[in-house]
Length: 395
Image (cartoon, rainbow, N blue to C red; front, side, top):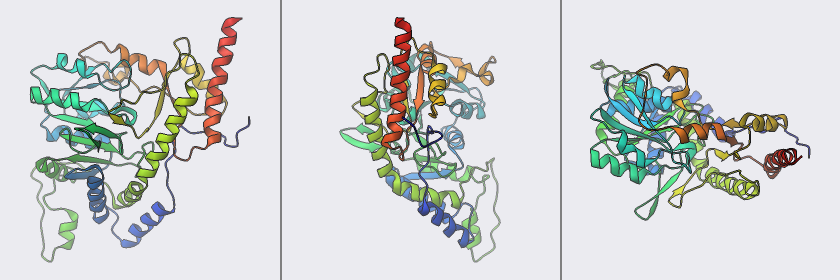
């Protein structure tokens, strides 16, 4: 089979004339920084997930930082989380001069193992930061119950999970509806919804929301929109340290169009994930991701566990040689040099499952524009590689 594309990417944002026209509208309005489009995007995102409050920021890392500050994380505190995540998860903890405490992930998935959390709690534990890895909801109910028992706030790193759902008290509800204390989202181009870059925090707590809005704009007591719209001269104050964590109206205008696309994007991605699982089921030893009965993933990524005898890099290179881009399994933060020094993290449990997931998995291409030809190309390449490997082993 020949393929017309030079490369099948791992991910590809869906951007079109609607987003281009939205940006044009904002440019011609003369107001391009944080303003009315950001406010509208926040309102529409809050309505979509079912949250009382949504605050837009520059990216998910800044969202995580503000969330941790809002729940009171201070120097010397500990935050329980996973090493098996993008490094931003732990970086945000260190921005607060606090200690990320790592526990392992579940053996049959890529999310935090709730059964290990309580063993990691110490008097210094001031938050639990769980991750909905690759868009698959973690066992939020179990984690929230632990938080309630120990009076520890729960923050959701929902960077990948916009549009994902969880079965909660018999109803399907969006990740971001405040089941925990705060949820943080990313709009990076690899995510299902993109604004180029950007982030969002959702919460039911109005005081948290007030803090987010204050801190994202340098701690300014009066916002730009209020000051510029006032008929009287207003002097703003800066009573506490803040940050430049704002989203622009250009980004928000794109986000609003992306949000309108989201239901169809998720429907398409779920169809593709189901097709992948079916067509890859005949490769001996290859394990597709499993969706729990209480979760509906947006399938931000499709991560497969390779047969035990397979070499991860060799498989990835063989696919790349055929024009198919892949990524290795999710990184382990504790293995990176930035976290190798004493005092940069604490491992509260064995991280065996986390390390295995990084070394034994690859992420396959999945994007809404993926065609039947694209899918066949990826699946056939995998079948061909493992058939050839089996033949070589038999000789």
